[in-house]
Figure 1 (cartoon, helix red, strand yellow):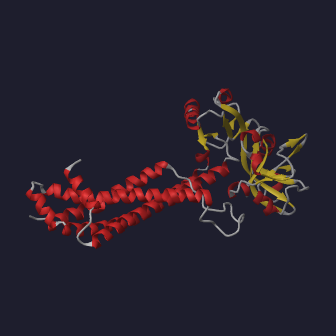
Figure 2 (tube, rainbow, N blue to C red):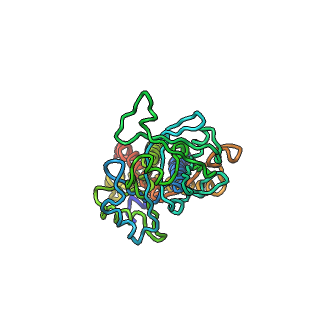
Figure 3 (cartoon, rainbow, N blue to C red):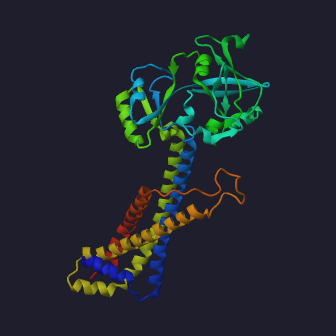
Length: 410
């Protein structure tokens, strides 16, 4: 144990001649601990929201999605895509075709995204977990094509899940201008019927705009025979998503992008990450203010220990060692506050996970979640600990050097 560290540790736990110094030191530790606990709780709540949103998307988005780097469509038999069906890590491979169309029924109309999928789509995703209504997931029967609408889209059109009238679906004909005198003559028209179910992802992007149907219907409507907009993949149970993603990207080359679920919803998760970053920055500023309390504690300690400093000088201690004692004292206060704050924050997060102490409302079921979600990421805990130590050190470094020179001159 070094000489400055030994003396600093003794000063930390020993009684001071003035009781107020002990109180101020305790307040300093509490201030750092409260700011640290706030960082742990706030960042964990952001993680909880992110994991919750990601969980909602897993019922609709595939684990991996292969899309063209340029343009909206690619040929279904394009080079490299056939390889996907032969990869041992891929258990299900589904071709999809998406584009915008106009939906009309009962004198109501709305722009939607038609997503044509293959029959194995319900095996690719957890779509059955988000179906609403009394029917089953079904894309076609004989010559009839079914359309499965999002819950908000059904509300916009004033339809139940088992609507009986056919949906009229319109899309521009390929390479043809719209005839303003009779626009319908320039549009392809198809009909969709109800399989007596809809879906509810609880995300407005899907629930208000998407219609799931067969890929054959989508190809007829958009005149894209032999084309797809993406290949959606489900991996084997023991496959690592990131490893498979890198492997496929290397094999497919720059013509294609392999997207995981977070990249498929990049805008949503990027906004959440920015919000988390801004919260982290603001709470770090609050932590800096809390660390300034340590300066008051150390300045009083330096004055209180002037006689001890003279004794240490007589024993051979130099200015650097004297300053080091009080620097280590400040760092130990930060360290103690960080440990206590992280422990308190983790305990509160655990209680929130188990009992939902802070809730969205008094009545259950009014919101998507009844209580604030919490997810502790240990990389965040490590970041918080390092942040507290660095901020604490920077907060006391210059003031302690100045004070020690001013009040501990021989």
